[in-house]
Amino acid sequence: MNEGGLKDHLANLVNALANLSPSRNLVSQIILATPEEQATLHHSFPELKVSEFREVLRAMGVVFEDKVRCAQESFAEALAKSIHMVFDWLDDEFIYFDFATDIMYKMNEVRSSLAKLTGSHVDLIPNPYLEWAKLVIEKLSRDYGKDKVMGFMKSLLNKLLRGRDRPPSIIDEVGAEVRANPAELKEICELLASSEGRGENIYVKGSRRHPTGYVWLVHCKYHLDPLLLEEFRSGGYHYYVDYVYKARHEGSLRRALEEVM
Amino acid sequence: MAERLEVEVKKQLSNFVQALIALAPSRNYVTQFLYLVKINGGIDYRILEDAYPDIVKGEYVRDAFAKAFGISFKDKVYLESGKFGDFLVGFIDRVLQLFEDPEFRSKINSLLKEEYPQGVPNLAQEWLEVRLKGLSSEPTYGKVAVKVLREIVRVQRAKTEELEKSLGISRGEVIEATNLLKLYGLVKEDPYGFTPSESLRKYPQVLEGI
Image (cartoon, rainbow over all chains, first blue to last red; front, side):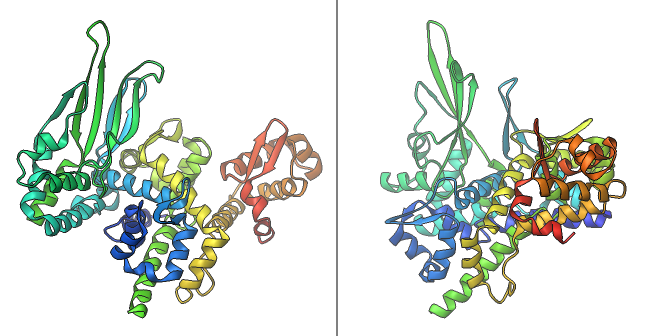
């Protein structure tokens, strides 16, 4: 195969993965919107009225009950996971761990490497996370007002959130700088930062029997997942636990805020 | 309204299916490379230099590939655990499974009749066809390997010495041929001999076409 061939195959691969992202595809949007009440989902996606479409989604593992969800181990579940991975990969944020040292790294030269391989400018490599972030911020700005949504996200990215013995409250720390009523603030926080507690445990430092810390990926309703929560345990007589939230996708989120502004 | 929704659904599904098909190792040189490296748990550098020179030979491309996908290029080339290349192959496996699922195929075919008049491709079967074609065109041991494979499929399990006897070929040829078959993921080896891969058990007719 000649060099042009390899470039084409790489470009096709990257474009195919980008085309599966929710900014470009309705199927992915629906799968990421689950679990959700059936009535709410039908309201958001009128295309679900087409019965053959629901049948295709069923065949992929989407379960239509009062609450629509993805069945465990189904293709739909694998697709949702893949979308998250591609978000991270094409935004230089793909996390991996060196088990020997317990150090967390990012694959942070993906975009520049793909640009070299395809012979294109790095800005021309698709960035599904940035595309999705812009859509989400635009939508929420319409629903809640630009000041509140952008103020919340900016404050989240600017602050270092730390807590002793329990994770800091995102709403308490960030909310003071956003002029929104508590109910709205809670909703914005769930949609943009954290929808439930600590999120998905992605790493145990030390050993499972004697952990020295944990890392959680904090999920939010619209899948921007801008926070990682790290727990540090201190042994000995004065035992304590420190929690720190770390921002992810910071560059793309700031760029999305600027572009939506 | 209903007609407009149906048109939109078809358009969206068509794009979605097209993107999934484009990932298949039978259609993409890069995913093919990643897939073969993964199913072999790593491949000797020298073998890949011959098989995928565009990726492996040049330092510039090799380094960029390593950084983009998480590949270690040493004496043995392997996908580094927990990095994107490793994850991607797992996802592609799920795509192959989806496209061989009769329920998914019938549902999607009924909606996308115009785009895929013959039906959407069975990507698992297609990947088997591509591997068998690749195997048969291997310049040195390709033809012997096909012969050995036919015998393994016929008897379902065979040891090296049994293949030597039944095919009347040298031990060296059997070893080279079975190495090729393992490389392409067409046979599995255990202490009791070689057995056909799962995809060959499912689609034995593909071998007849070679």
